[in-house]
Length: 283
Image (tube, rainbow, N blue to C red; front, side, top):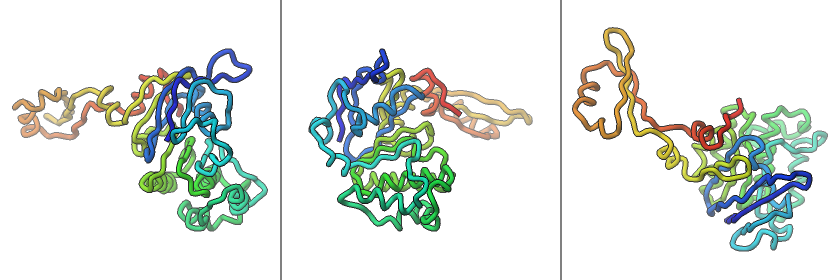
């Protein structure tokens, strides 16, 4: 769907590049996670990809054609959910969505979407009276109202309660199952791990790492198994390599001791994030 080659972008008043020569591609029908600390270049990259920022260096292709060759018809194909919810505060939620529906040639029925995310009963309430979580859910529905083929989601579940976050993640996965493509940024590594087919880490305008979450966890993790067990009322632990778990001593421990837990040496995306970018995730 999108192919990026040697992309660079510099803001007018800056001497440094916000994006400094990055390459990646997003395949049709996949969820691509774009991760990095604040100021790393994530938002700039998204704004370039959705044609909000022009004047970039390098090459960007969308469906095999240069991005710059597309006119405003491009926006009929995509849905965008920004990190900061954008709505007209003095209009109701439904009035907001009806306004944006006028911008598109093809739209969907809003009722089932609003019911799905729990906003239907509050559809006549002014958006300015919505809580942060409600505004984010409204923002998410707005990204879907034109039945897009490509979604750009920036922190889509940040500030949303666990129940509605689960619903939104299910909707993202259903969008993918129907053939949709997603560019996703988030600091919630659990969401990234669950949703994304591939991820890329960016720091200081450069890509540091890219791959499938499972492959990266194997690459950066340890090939070990740690066994925690009780002996004479005290807790002990012993770590085995993947080769050592084939030995009789491993099975003897499992058979003879009071086992409490087994842990693999697999790392987490959060640990990979910190190691690759050098920056800890914000609280």
